[in-house]
Image 1 (cartoon, one colour):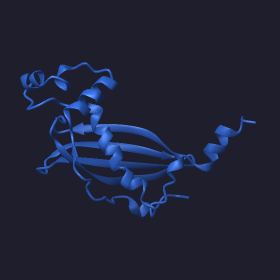
Image 2 (tube, rainbow, N blue to C red):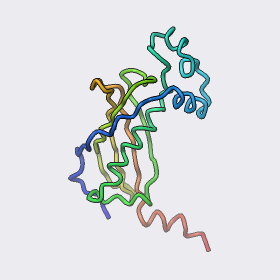
Image 3 (cartoon, rainbow, N blue to C red):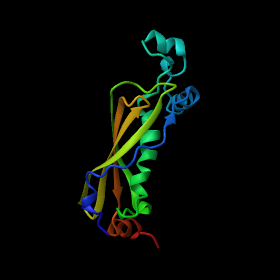
Image 4 (spheres, rainbow, N blue to C red):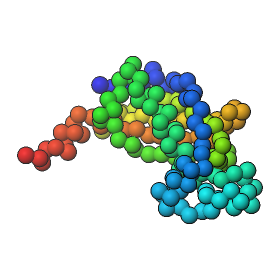
Length: 158
């Protein structure tokens, strides 16, 4: 079923605040194999002009993808999440995320299009701190595979 084009431009309410913690930053940096001391050592971060440790650039994905769940779970949109794969991701920053930030995300559907039997949905997540200052923007591309695409991948199975 085609996604409802009237949803392009629709924004969802901001998420509840997410508090960025030092330990979460450390765990994430370790998981992605980034040993930058600004991610784990407050003094190293301060030497670079930050008030506390900062998060690796892709850390923001954890909160923006979760926020995009509001879009995914919207029954009126008609997205079948069982067919969804993550297509692309990009980020733009005003400043790094840092320990102690309390961040909210507002998700907006930017585009919906069909291509080769698939539905492609672009969601923008605007990240703001508790003072309302813009911190970062993330763009997430979701691809809902069409039924024909699933048949193509199972055709060789017996």
